[in-house]
Image (cartoon, rainbow, N blue to C red; front, side, top):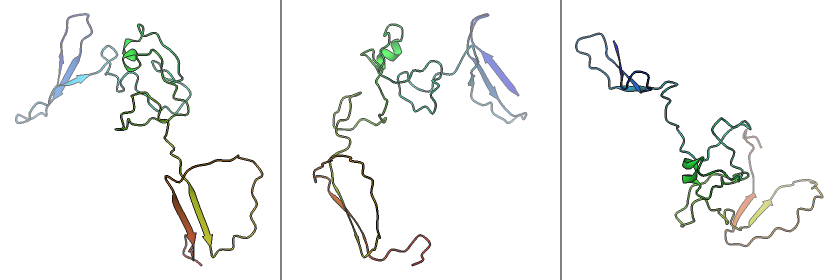
Length: 164
């Protein structure tokens, strides 16, 4: 059996509820569950202003690309709660990342995300033969040794299939 309940007045949209139970005397009725309809849509699953990854250039209705544009705070008061400056952050080329315990302000840019460090590598006991490189000049890139670590390769290495 299915029981449908409605709360409201004639002509006014109101939520409808449903519950059920089996066709046996011992069966308990289920808890009431709300039915969602075009007149009573479900709440949005994402808070207004929350950045979400989207796999397309076509933006869904009611959403905006985060490209640094300003918006009318009186027309979009819920968005203004998330972005009180009235400007949606420009997320092009950025990654969504949680706020650290360091005290950095919400919506601020992390300036030292790629700390300076150095790499070294060594190949020993290997004849690499003649190798060529491109002639493109990438310029001089410098780092310090604060995050120094060494990757060492050498000795006898088997291939994936275990042959020698």
